Length: 175
Image (cartoon, rainbow, N blue to C red; front, side):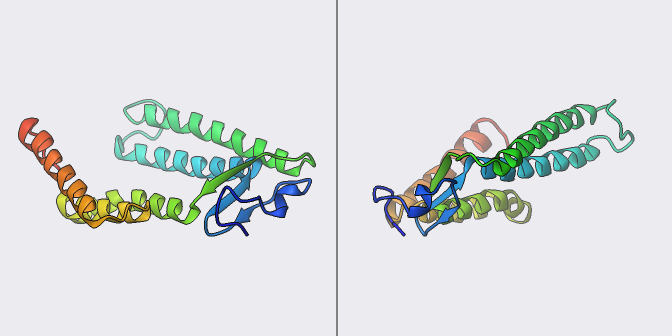
């Protein structure tokens, strides 16, 4: 399997139908499969949006009231996501060849996604400055930026900028 995107593609690309290819440096997925996966994730997000609307107004569970707007958005978002997933599933069943989408450094992409999801939860338990500095340094490492001094200067500079602009200049306390 190639480790460089400039090298020839694996033989699975030469087949009539595109397949999933995973190496340490490349993930290749057929577009219909990606539509199904992303559609399912978006439907889950729509469900979370619907459930989250209960925190706005607990007295009303319908579409009328303060929680109505997020519920309406959740319904539209869920319907469009369902259509996307169904279209992808139908295309997966067809025999025609599908285009592929390639992700370079798939493990780094997944690690960065996990970090982005974990960040707000970490803010719920720790101070903004205790979370953001180490989080930025870890993100730099994952993305391949591994020069220690610039990493520390960027993280510290961002924290100083946030403190000066948000807390001191605008008077907005950070979590």
